[in-house]
View 1 (cartoon, rainbow, N blue to C red):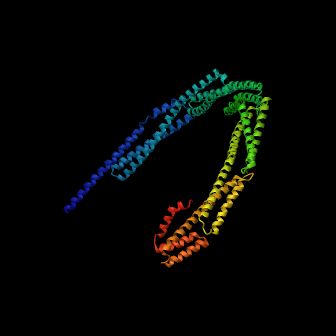
View 2 (view 1 turned 90 degrees about the vertical axis):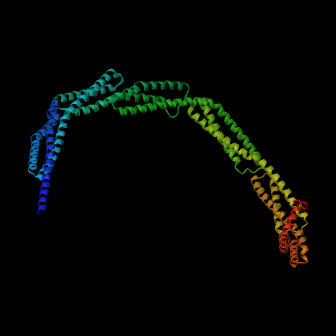
View 3 (view 1 turned 45 degrees about the horizontal axis):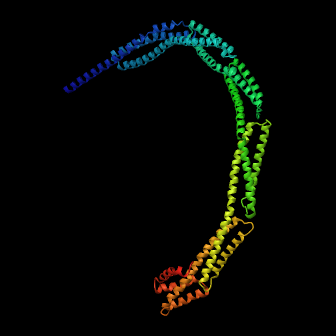
Length: 571
């Protein structure tokens, strides 16, 4: 029982301590909120409003001031009273231990204080903006008025730099002066909002005018001084060139100069419209056309110098190329009597002659025009450049043709030497075969031998024609050389086989009476040797049997044969 009582007492004490702690926590929050409310009431409303009123408000500024004043009065009259009531309610409910109600009031107070502070900050900023607008307007107006005065003075002292644009610029300055006066009236009346709008437009207008007054003098200087001076220089230059009998192609310079004069005068007058975009485009066009006239005249002067300096060189080049062509055609005609020219050399040389004739004709026509003082030098110079390039290419082609035919005689001589070599070699082969006194030769060998002999005869006949075709002869040389090499190889093989067969048969005599197979193979080899003339097969027949009886015997006989071969027969 006592323990229960003690427990109840402890619980009561804990609850009491908790109530006291929570009550004090709420009291601290309420005190803090009350301090915040007091800070809001101490904001310098009167001072800020007074500073704004001192600007002399009217129009938009007056409307803005009235709006912020009305909102401030509403907060001062009702907003602060509502905050006081809720602070009292929170404090009362907290003292009466109605903690939930007190917490709700504290939360509402916190939100309302935040909202009230934001509203008051906005109101204070509104009053300050009215004052700031007035100050900014004054500073901006001061800068714009100074720029205006600078521009007016500039136009007054340097009106000669603007030409026909001066009147239009004066009108713009008058309009700006009217806008500045209008701004002053609104400022004096206190309508700083409207004054600000006027200043914004003024800023734009003065900036545009300042830009115009910077861009016009260079354009006017071009139109009034530079372009006319350049046109006069061009006229004088043209007169000098005309006196020197210069001609110009596809351009009437006097008409172009006259048209440029009119264009410059019209553009100069259009300055009063102040359309600088169009004027600058016109100036660029005029400058481009003037530069083109300078380029045309300069090109003709340079072309004249080039024609004079390269005339003799080109004439010599043409003479040299034509002389080369005549010599080439003479050489081709001579060679054509003895050789077949298979690469259209003669027609190529004739085509080159036609090109050379055309080049000379153009050159002579140009010289006639130069002599008659009717030549356009730039066109003549272009013809010169074309002629030099064409002549260089023609010389290369003529040299290529000449080099290609110069090898014909050398080719014929080489072919004759090759023919003599072929005849010697086939006679040598015939002597070597005849020296062996073989019982006969196979039909295959005889056919091939006479084939090669006929090829050599044909080559000899072709080389002894009145007009030879070296292309055909070259092919015959290659074919004959290949076939002759093959004939030499087959002849050597046949000779080796025949002589080896004889030595193998002699070697086989030692076994002929003791080995029937050797006797049989010897008889077959003799038959192949004497009747079929198949010396290679004869050697293989007897060698096969000997290897069976005495291994290595064939190699022994072969080595002995090749050692004595050079002594027995010079191949």
